[in-house]
Amino acid sequence: MPRHVEIVCTGNICRSPIGEVVLRAKLAEAGIDDVEVTSSGTGAWHVGDRMDPRAAAVLRRHGYDGSAHRARQFRPGWFADRDLVLAMDSGHLAELGGDARLFADDDVPDPYYGDDADFDDVLAQIEKAADQWVGRLSTQA
Image (tube, rainbow, N blue to C red):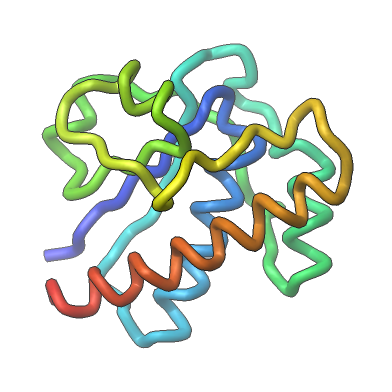
């Protein structure tokens, strides 16, 4: 039975879609094919939108493809269908409640009001955390 990981940020156009794309790619590289990775936001502002162009660009620069992403809003009822809900920062964690956990050791800062360097930093933090999740998920197989 496939496992399901949900990654959550504010609007589902920057951090969580980057996390979704990176974690999915790293799981595939590790040969872990029983984990579905999706993402969503705590708010509905961007539902149906593509990811922020700067997020898509940082992914492209590092060999990832985020072109299929469309923003959606997290629904509390999803906790029952998700094996793991990962929040990008402690504010999302508090808002989600339930059995959510932080994606990284430290809050992943919101790059939305920043520049390309902020998106690069966020990607690096997400890649490091994704590597750790791949390790954890491979031992739970």
